[in-house]
Length: 322
Image (cartoon, rainbow, N blue to C red; front, side, top):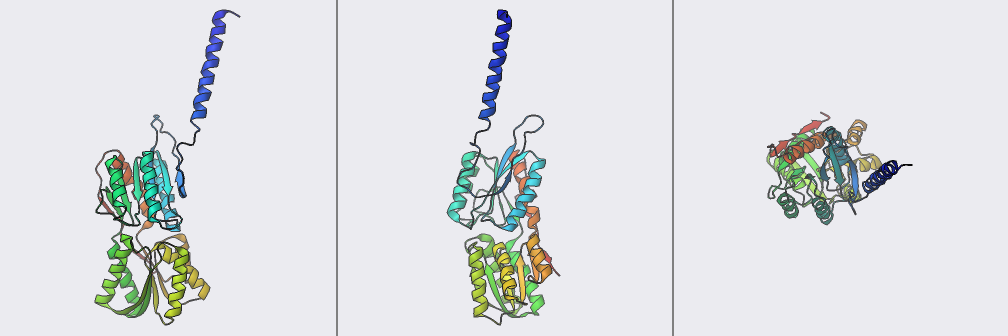
């Protein structure tokens, strides 16, 4: 074999070894998010022109069917735009975990973050930290208007509470006694829904609110509170649920007890729609949550590209079952 041919063979072997080393390096786990409860996510391929995908983070208050539906819609939109998603949520609502997960996304250097903050004031600092590092942040479901977030996506929560009050009043003819199960007492969205409900009932009806409980994002606690309220107030006319966790838990309680009272739920999921068809839910008040995923991707994509976009995306309110 000539020295020239031998040199070419050695060069070819060297290139093959280098290529193999690069491929092995690309399989490292450095892109994973440690110590986090992932509720979903997707990895987008590089675009045809070779540009790497953008990475957006979505951070929920807790794991819940409504958020899984939002994730599914976000993944569909992300797949169309060469976007990789990191989706995280505590098993149950937890401020410290949500802050820690937000910090990890900032450390990763994601290209945008969407968050439903469990406490708008407590999370303002970490939202501002992301903004200071050039990471656009949009809030959905619950706003943090005192922070440097770029936009809010969702319905008017106080107006949602008023719509629930109107719906209850129509079925009870303006009179009766109701129980109210709500979510996290520190979450801006649930406080506003409760305020809207109480304001409408006090101004326009003779309906008495017998008791209000807050489940703090725990399905188990919500079910126990519902059972206790029903036991303490057996002559109640209706139950009003002001968050996703309460609504899902009420279906289980209605099934177990065989109740025939009015039951008003928040949030349109396939499970709640089925429960309404089966008679466990009377009405569903929806903020068109099924559109939030696509709106999140659209808002973050515009901001990641440095384009102007609306500061507020109102997804409006619907009443299901009328």
